[in-house]
Length: 358
Image 1: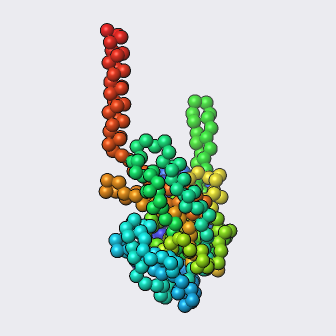
Image 2: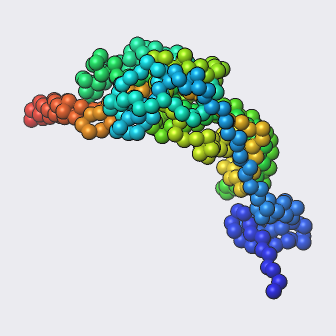
Image 3: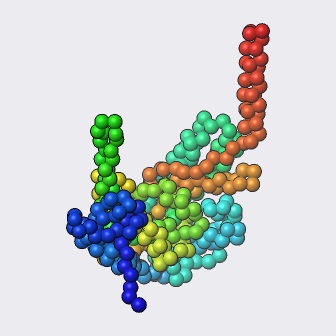
């Protein structure tokens, strides 16, 4: 049986035909015309899409025995978070859930970080920033801003995978351009349809992906960016006085999020080149990664977990820049007291006004 081929109008969906008078393909429903060569290119692109090629090499370097001997790992019995600290740490509270943890062993077989960004924001500066964050907010429970509670803030080195790559991308768009004019009492609008091709290259360096399930990924991305120019070769001495969470999402499992961030940034950059057109829509896309690499790093984060009326309120601060994110608890008792006082005052004002107009 012979194969039937139909070309549909990308504007209205009608079947388009070749118009001998204009030597163009023409839609009989909306009178849109198309160049036959452009339709053939579009058909080939739609029927032969190029798959994405986004693969990575993962780091392999491990700690040597001398470095392992100076580090301890202990496990939280509540949330299961594995936290790395220097050899002097015995027992403390989990910076992720606030519960006590005890040392259970030493590092064994873990990948050694390649890089690290040291803490620049001190604990006192972090505590002051939290105080400033709650200043003037009358409904925040008093215990939250107490000195004893703010002392629970913990400096944690959070594991990150840093992905670097060159991108070769090819994206085809369907787009329109319109112009309007008036003739007499009639308004006319002409809409032209275009097929746009964009091809080019981008370079990405140190795209970060959080390698721990113990901290919220959205929160960690919210305290970005980090100044990557301050990355230093990893040394265990930087961990002294802080905690370090060992990754529990490996480099291979983190590739999906890295690819999402690279893909979105690539598409955003290409989209910016279509500014003269109206609402361009990507029809086909091919993204290839070249010369890619992945490194393991630790980033500084100040963490504070506070619970109020059975709900956990986590806070995170970028230990390099001081950027702070988190939701504040609300004292419902104070809320209702203030609400009733406000409602009472409003009712009293309305009553007085009504007396004046009797």
